[in-house]
Image (tube, rainbow, N blue to C red; front, side):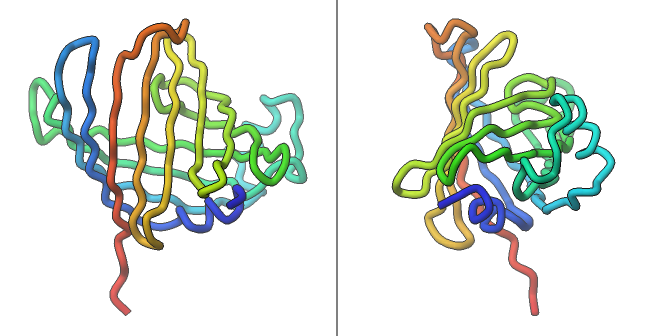
Length: 179
């Protein structure tokens, strides 16, 4: 697996069911999400802004940039359990070699700031993403069980990496369109 194959396999509409365990608060959270992943043009103005901010990267340095959108319903919503959290981010892969590289995200997973992550692929095709934020460190793993089913796990640690704050597991199913 390489980053271009991974993005191609990830493209589409997904329904995600995530269970998270917050060790800090000793609580479980169930989240249902709709996730959309679509490639974007290398001429996209938001992508060009990200490349300029990163010291003038060019489109020849990147592979398969994409836009990810999500809308999530969580059982943790204090005021209205039907309240939906949504957002979007641009994700820019910068391969170092066929199995690893850097991923730029306009919005991070664990903290709502721009993020730079290291990615790699294990021999079985599992995508591993490690991100150091200001207040935490996140490690995510994504693997495909079949063409239309994938799993995702994450561990959120303290900024020193000495304590685990949260763990989660997601099963995600591609939404198929009727022909």
